Length: 180
Image: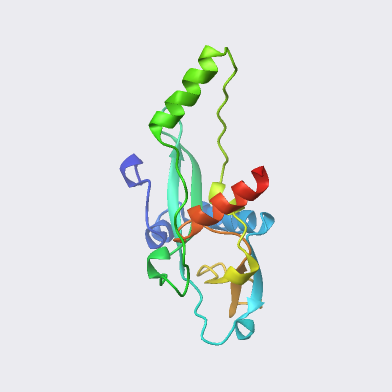
């Protein structure tokens, strides 16, 4: 695989000569999700009747250094949000965004008053959005990465995950509650 092929599908990644790096990347992703308390595994039988778990997808990405050499094989597990049904799986997706005019006004006021203005970035933003107890979402474990002796169990999400339709709304609620 060359730089043009740095986004293989999971099947392509497993069929490549670098398959052991992709498998390690997948294991690291699941460990990271577990360490961040994104989910707990529960028996499928513990899900409420009529509930269907979301499916997910493993997304692969090669990270390169300045000279083009592959430095890292990143794998992310994301929800197939396009399969979610409004009114059943979610009811709100909106989150406020700042208008450019408002942002410029804040910068102008800060510059006029000689104030220090700082920006920050929150890594893995949506993975910090706490799902309310009444908005429980279930998700399938990724193929090839099922927990030992729990292959028929599902992930009960405690926090939002990338790909969910309501991820930005959940993150905004969590951020708003924390700031206020």
